[in-house]
Image (cartoon, rainbow, N blue to C red; front, top):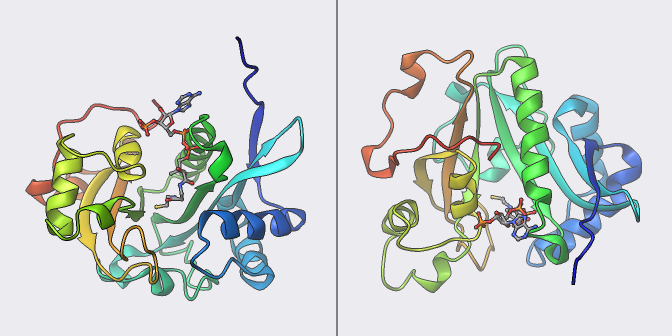
Length: 234
Ligand SMILES: CC(C)(COP(=O)(O)OP(=O)(O)OC[C@H]1O[C@@H](n2cnc3c(N)ncnc32)[C@H](O)[C@@H]1OP(=O)(O)O)[C@@H](O)C(=O)NCCC(=O)NCCS
């Protein structure tokens, strides 16, 4: 039986979307407090171009979202957690003057609408924005969602290496690797109270080849390298 694929549009977030985003975060992260009106208003005020929603045009339902800010990476340590990278979820550390790194604070798709290509459309829109602004790269923490299944047997580093080699599959990390992101570190206590990742994330990076220099690729941890010519848009 043929199934009509939903028509999805990705556009910048408006204040009218806030209630839907709050509901979405309740569904995706039931263990954490949802985004607040104040936080979403702050994102919108500081960096409207960095905030996206995916909308099903048939129902006008918000089925996904992404939130980001620009940071000067050298102001932070690799071990910095989500709360500090986002200034308690307010993005008041957004620094478009000195910063060249888009920090991916959030990407989420409604659980009932995942695996329909919606996340890819969001990533694509965000990438177009980064290219348009001439930013150097995207970085962010990718939750190790299935790590709780292996935590008694291996370290998070070992888990990530196995996912990179294709020996294990993680619903978030495997997908992000396929999208052309590289792991540059593995960090604990990033998202508190996440029962799936146990707080562990892989720090992911996508580099804008149009503006990068060889130094921007230097110093990557050999253990996390993969031979890859995958396009982030594939
Ligand atoms: C990570 C996330 C944003 C991905 O969103 P998504 O809409 O499911 O992404 P896509 O549908 O574009 O791709 C996901 C998978 O579905 C596959 N897919 C896409 N369209 C498909 C279709 N029509 N039929 C079957 N599979 C499809 C993709 O190939 C991809 O496969 P892979 O996992 O083997 O790589 C989503 O899973 C999510 O919200 N997770 C919870 C929150 C989270 O962890 N966010 C990341 C923060 S670190």
